Image 1 (tube, rainbow, N blue to C red):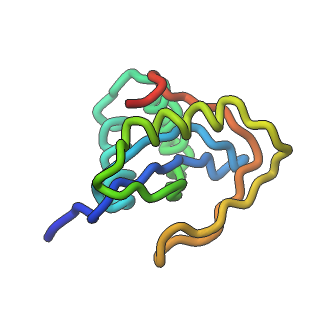
Image 2 (image 1 turned 30 degrees about the vertical axis):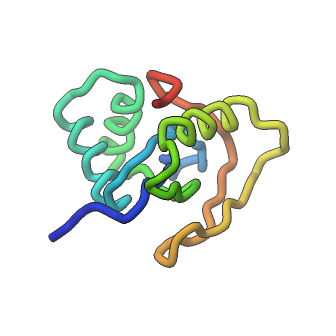
Length: 124
């Protein structure tokens, strides 16, 4: 089974308890596979802040929600797109909550109530 998609996805991880956007990343895989990788890193005791947060959720029998922020065609720079998304969310200039429209056929609208990014880097 091929787990890659034909483009990059810039995605976010949402805390289901309070609808906080906690992480921005990129993947060339299907989003559910990328979410599973994040959970596995948390279970393997990765010490980055995002994995501390995921472990907190797992203790409560919860998981982060993953949503697609933007699709990036293979000929564009995913590094730039990821950095732009992180900067955008770190410096939001509008009131929350925000309802993000679906970006793929399998997506649904995503509500974001707060932003508290736990990214260890600024992307790229």
